[in-house]
Length: 372
Image (cartoon, rainbow, N blue to C red; front, top):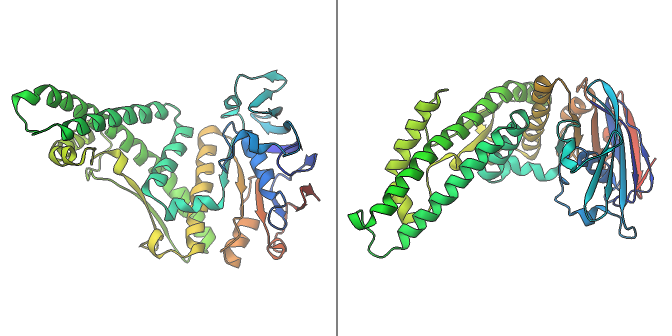
């Protein structure tokens, strides 16, 4: 997969023009607020997703314009393709000359992975962010997993509502008068155990696939001086690939937690309590990792996500790396600039000194929305 040409008109602060990257590593450098990240954002929108910066549609259009137009010439599925996005309140997509119902029609047709500074929360942030990363990444490999997640969320929401209703009932006790609610809770417990088992198995499967790729990339970034480790922290200690064994273990744990769940008014056991543990040389990266190590760990996860997509889809996603050089030592910067082969990579940075170590690809200076 490769971007041949990106054209833009009225998008953010970018002046009307065209961006023609090389097939390898491309550096976009310049001072802050000049438009570097806007180029990456424009590329990302063609994946069918929303802005990775969380921007509203209206914020994508230059303040003195009524609409923005983005055009992309790209190579995918062994052929040249074209796509355009018209942004005016909402996005309208045309793919190979045919109007599409939704920008999501680009999903799977144009693939990219993105790294931006906010992704550092993947290491330093809450377990919810790491669960979201695993789930979103696995959905790209197994689109059917989205329905599994939806089912689990629905069951969890209903069970929590029932627990809250039982907790607030006066003089709660497990007597015949409470039989209907307790019988319903038994049903939700059973459904929760099975659904949680499906989610846990999927996350374990994803980590098993991504682990060797991420550790290899991190080894390259650190020059072999450090080792990255990934594991799934779960309330269920049963290490099995069998759905029935895991379901039974969850059922027992949910049953044991019933009284505490009722007291709390929410479910304290389940796949929603899992966490991705990221360690560097045996130490938790969240607690002991330096800024450079944490950035390297997130970068390894993102690049390994792209490598795994290539194994599955036989298409190498494009890597969009925003401000990735900050906090990295010279050897880690050198690995990114000169040792990622066979990929199209777009990197933004402020420091022009870093680009002096690049031995191939292209360099672009971004100034006042102009690509020089």
